[in-house]
Amino acid sequence: MSTLVVAIDGPSGSGKSSVSREVARRLGLAYLDTGAMYRAATWWCLHEGVPLDDQPAVARAVRALPLDQGVDPAAPHVRVGTTDVDEAIRETAISAAVSAVATNLDVRDELRERQRAAIAAQADASSFSAGRGIVAEGRDITTVVAPDADVRILLTASEEARLARRARDVHGSDDDDAVAATRDQVLRRDADDSTVVQFHVAADGVVTVDSSDLDFEQTVQAVLAVVARAA
Ligand code: C5P
Image 1 (cartoon, rainbow, N blue to C red):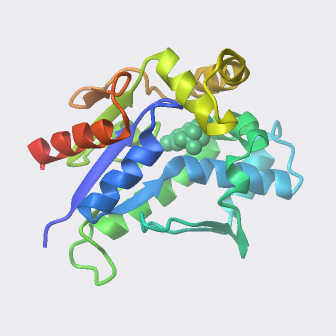
Image 2: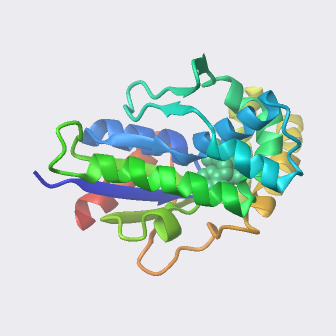
């Protein structure tokens, strides 16, 4: 049985998590949200009282992170130890702090190893537990974690579209106040993240899907079309 690895990167608000998860569901593939790993690592450091500016201490804590992450797109779960952190890791406090952890290069080494292992487990056609492959999404999947993926996509959207989407997600509205409240956080986080990973321009061989003028279903269809062409 052959397996398929689909790598999807993009900035915040590009819709990559919801689109990647739906693409995985429709294709019967596993789904790995690598942003959730950085968020869970941040939650763990805060929970353990590790100062985020103490880089060696953060790296040590993340190496010991007892992460249990499900890869079923119908019911993905994120647990740290026995604590279900699915909702807690989406809170504003974590979004505001996550770049400090994600720009720690030792943390990236640790989480990239775990991501490669999770992808390899699903891509191993001889394994009984493996499915038919995986959709993995984040900021550096197409370039660093899985540069040999069968399909590599950069999902982008204009700044305006990304801010409006994030405002609707977080504040339930995309009026001027909601967009303004989102602006700093989204743009600052992308700027901070960009100091260690490049996800605004497609690397060689990576197909760009621009979702600025597409709704959710159209974006899913656009990604499925790229997969169908490449696979
Ligand atoms: O995708 P999401 O917004 O949940 O990602 C949260 C954070 O995790 C990003 O802002 C970034 O700091 C980090 N991240 C990363 N590399 C990835 C995925 C996420 O640095 N592959």
